[in-house]
Image (cartoon, rainbow, N blue to C red; front, side):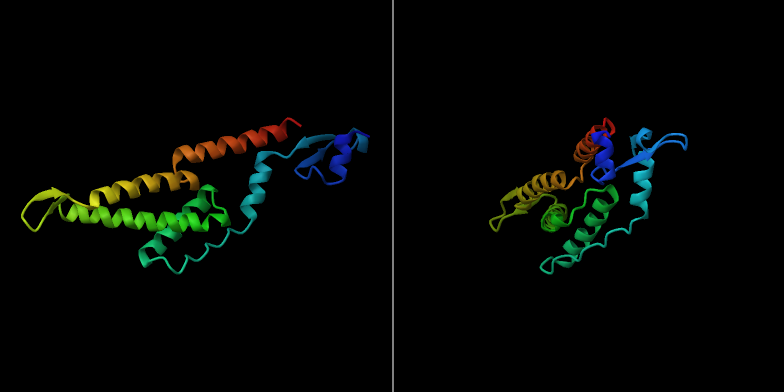
Length: 165
């Protein structure tokens, strides 16, 4: 008996299935990987994970961003329960960026000092730093197109390794 057949019989290769017709003996049955459509069907029938509640220390606007970010991550398949703190950080950083950009917009990007001197708004560097941080966190969470494509390539590579068996 082949070692591959033994592995299937023991349940080690649970993502494999036996395929054969009635004229083949049990030992002659071919063993092939499950099709992608079958694995997609099984994932579609599973219940969608519940959106976790936002940490209590987030402001109301950051809580909304937290929930919307989790929803996006669930839709694209990048959400993991261990990401909650990163998503909370993303939401707060987003709120900092948004508040700073609103202030910049309200003041046309300038600040008039008490002596009448016109300078650049102090909110500009805040918005710039928050923007850099947002991009970095978004990459880590798989929220950018480039980071999602890297995740998809890794997933496809793993699937191809299984298909080669």
